[in-house]
Image 1 (cartoon, rainbow, N blue to C red):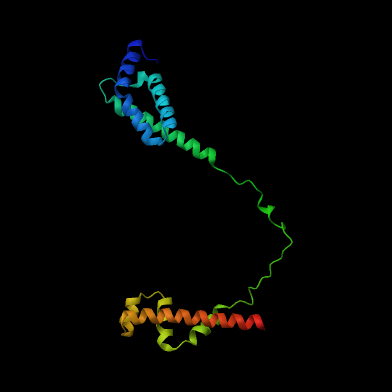
Image 2 (image 1 turned 120 degrees about the vertical axis):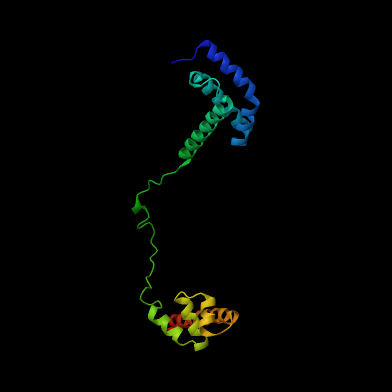
Length: 178
């Protein structure tokens, strides 16, 4: 169904009354004068070609703005799809791509049991709050349970981490020498 000559004229008259508003809205959507003008023209064309779908007596401006917004969204989605880069490189492309071999030091690294031994060597004042924090207790819960101020607990856990870090570095240094 196509619009009658009268419907076309009525739509043109209505469009001319909201042209400035539509141009401003298109600029707000696009942020660019050239894109805004293109969006306005696409919208005006769509309004004119779909004149028979407008129900006289309803809010023409709302109808036109909805058309503009939909055109903008569709164009944005097309643009995003166009810029999407799909990696079609075979997964084995980088296998054997170099002659450098990497030694797997997995067995010589510190294991969980060795870390536990390092933790066990900490003084009780540091070890107990550290282990409680490791088990998921909150600082205030640890402070309450141990009967110590919150600041003391925070500093003991901090210093326990620092001591463990130092002890770990010493173990790694000894391994690299051996």
